[in-house]
Length: 61
Image (cartoon, rainbow, N blue to C red; front, side):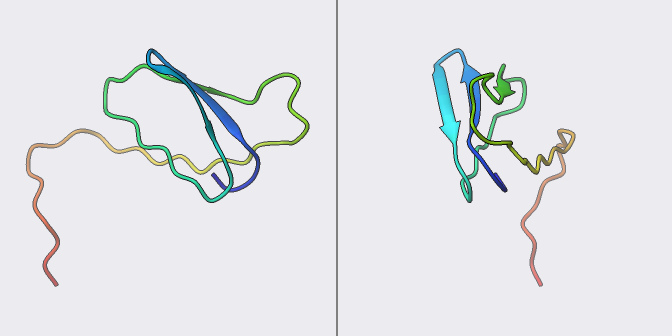
């Protein structure tokens, strides 16, 4: 999260993700991220995703 507080609804419950916090979601996991209508601030988010792959290996410099 870059600025604000983002609400994220999942089957397990609703989470609030604040500034300088991170939320990781497993592939195929249902979620809905939103800024509530009564929020007092704008939310700025950086979201990064990647396709699934089977050839994962650790980086070794």
